[in-house]
Image: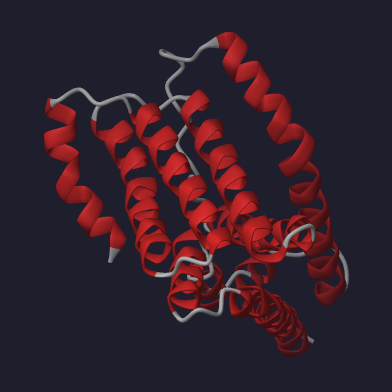
Length: 246
């Protein structure tokens, strides 16, 4: 829904030479304003702002690719501004507990990232094209890399090692290419992709509109449970493959 709508905006913004980084800063500002409105108890305005944020969040990457402005700075900035926005929204709803909920939300989003990486690696596909280096700001990039390394990298390493260990356990040792293929079904990737940030903000917006923003945080537990069940299904696929080989 959001991606096709964002695509419509790419040609005019490209003609106007809009900088994708400015789009990132704009949708972050909208999310922060939405968080303040939620804190005040507003409903319709923040719910709508969150969907505009999602639209622009999908637009910045498309605009960067269409205009040859993909940079490492842009990728890091987009990811980290999403974190800032998510933290502000969660704290606006749950106070200090919002920080812990932001971490849970980040872990759910990291699973999506890692499962897509596993899926493509098992099939010999390129996960993400390397960004162009032209246009990067060395000092800004160094700062963004440091923030990413401090917050996101530990989560990704922990989850990646867990998934690898579970695969080895299910395969009874070093996994074969067939094991890796069985461990990364399209169904699991589809589930995790549909728990991405666009869905998170859509659900949050619906809860805010209903006057029950706290329901969104309850949904995080259900999402985590769904991912856990899917992980067990992934392992079961490998075990059944191993049994058939035996």
